Length: 217
Ligand code: DX5
Ligand code: ZN
Image 1 (cartoon, rainbow, N blue to C red):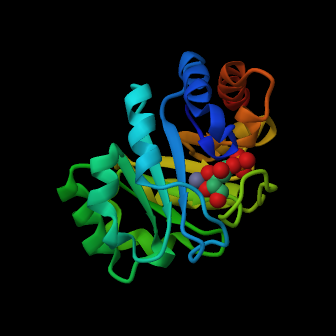
Image 2: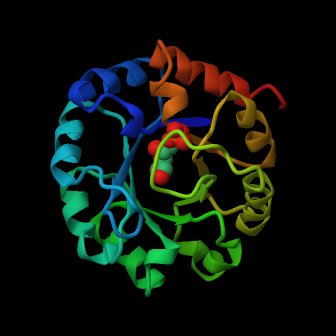
């Protein structure tokens, strides 16, 4: 199981230190939440912060774009240092085109699904995907409660994906109690914000979450 700490729950005034702690704890990548106040009712960070993080870590940066018209910013985020760009299917009028735009810009391509969006929305773009991000909360804020039906959705997505080498990632309210069921359903990556940066020792929290995901195996 890969673990991607979401820096949204870190102390932004001590971001470098937060990143170093989860990197030392064995995190596989960093999840960076970009919000525009339109697609979601919150504002977070943009390319300059990603550029600064890029200089401080060797971890791949998995940038979750919760913004409308993401096609306007793809190249900017890749230039800032994003290794993977994940766009919301609900925010893309021309999803197929945007996925190719991401690849051409030199990044890996992901698609996120809101809790109310079914897997059929991505059925015809599967061959262009490196990652599917299953939102297990309504996006916009860290620290919300996990929506239980997300586990069944992960199972459906796993069967849709078949043998394709696509990462199945789950984002929102993920903690030790849901890690095991998610792993069993087919998740290959867990994104966690408050469960990691809300812990006394974020590095240890990365290890604990991975350990919890292995319990039901
Ligand atoms: C929610 C974000 C998540 C969030 C996760 O809109 O996409 O990545 O930071 O935080 P927790 O793990 O606290 O739900
Ligand atoms: Zn996210």
